Amino acid sequence: MTDPDVVTTSADAFARLAVELHDAPGVEETIDAVVQFALQALKCSYAGVALYTRNSRPEIAAVTDPVVADVYNLQINTQSGPLVTALRDRTTILIRDTTADPRWPEWAATVAALGVRSVLDVPLATGSRSTVGVLGLYSPAADAFSEDDEAIAHILARHASVAVASARHEETMAQAVDARKLVGQAMGILMERFDIDGDQAFAVLKRYSQDTNTKLRDVAQQLIDTRRLPH
Image (tube, rainbow, N blue to C red):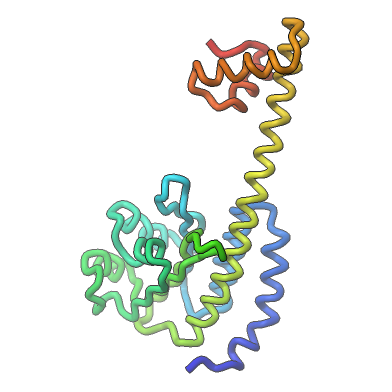
């Protein structure tokens, strides 16, 4: 049974983490803060985060040791293992001993050979019920993670889920603002050079974007950089 004192003792640490995540300038910095906190707050030797990408494949976002990248790549390449299952089913996966767990025998044998015995994969999910990614915790000791560790890991995962979703949204908004600025500058160049109005300038950019199968912001950037439209 989870000791309430353990969770209570971590309250101040999580409060500090929340501030740190809020102040992180981007997704990469947010994830780095999460994995470093995991090393401090939990009985793990290594930690990592894998995030869903637009093509629905997990992507390694942060690791505290190269061995975690090896553990992740084995699963990403085969699309099998606790990471893939945690992402797909939005469920926590605990492996108490990779030398004895029967669920993914080939993966477990390889991971055990890397010196990892205990694995705890916790999904990062938002209130919209979409999975953001997975927080992975690893130890060279068998049966390393207690109920208290699981409870703390779930609290950390909730903090991380909200922080990552927020950071991604802010980056997307920033990119959208940047794209609008680029398109506006490119339209200004076309309007001045060819004595056309804004609607006509935008139509020119859009046509070149479609004809060359190039993103509109990239067409605009090329025009700004070279003062020439793509061929």
